[in-house]
Image (cartoon, rainbow, N blue to C red; front, side, top):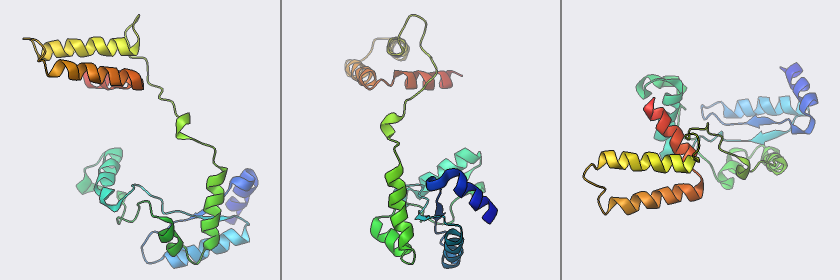
Length: 191
């Protein structure tokens, strides 16, 4: 194990950290002590994490559903694939300081780690496959498909309450540039 740590430390230099993460299984104190010893002996800074899966404990059931979907099993059969408790939520700084009270350097290093990150969610681009028809923009294809679908749904004519809602939603999708997303969903449903 220490050979691996040394290799990673040399390879990643100042960007290599070891994470302390509670499992809440009654062994956290021992595990933290061993990791702390390994980190000190190998000159690897510790960081503190709760490995959050959701923002609030009440979201645990949704997390379980997502895990079951990812693993292609029913929730009742997911067993040990699911988190053993509802502790994997975003904890505030006071709670993290309490959990890692014996390792204040891990809390401090977590801030150092985050200060080094340069990623921003604004950098993400949605790269949807081209689903629009030739000669049309994605928005034009979506509008054409939406109007054709509305005509099939309402063969006697689109009700006066529905028509403005369709226009409002198409306008919103156009302003947000989400047409490609809806075309991808349309393709999946058609498939």
